Image (cartoon, rainbow, N blue to C red; front, top):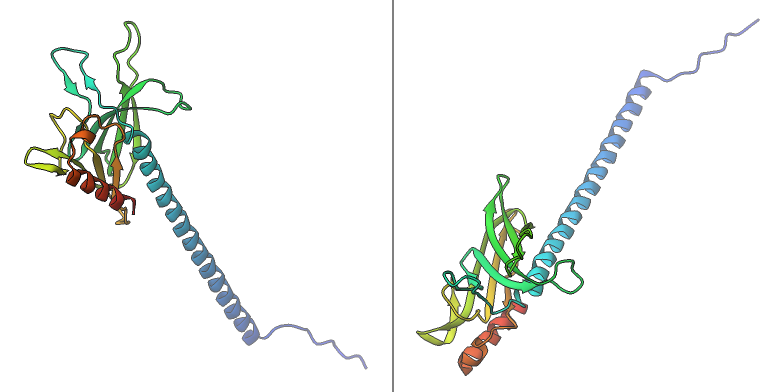
Length: 227
């Protein structure tokens, strides 16, 4: 007598259990991937933020700290001191390092502008000395930092009412550069940016005119900025 072989297979209950377990595993897998992606993005954002701080800090340390106390006296009708500072704008003369392709003194102009996607700090660089006849006046515009909420300068130097020196919101109609420049930057994401205080190395007569109290105040302000 022949016996028919029973068909092997899964019951409906077993299929439902398997599908449920598979669904749970897929959810756990994608959750883990999302956590890893978020952690990676946060790490990338932190690296970008650190790089932004380093780039801005290096810019001011390399260029602003070596600003030259020069006069723009190429025209007798418009003789002004090259260093001019406002609360959100700054102009000074400095030079690129020897390794850079640009040579000679350059006029740096910084200001906060709106490009439609938000505010950014723009740097304009032009040769300080007039170009020879027939040559092109080369102006270069560089974005120093994007996504800026607020940006301001203040200047430490002598004042007629305060011989020991004090912080001022602008530096106009002066004949010497300030001793210190303080830079405050706020980002759109609310990230913390410490105040930067840059000491100008070539301050001309201002070093000799500062009283002992002013010298001590300047040194204290500079130390505060380094901390």
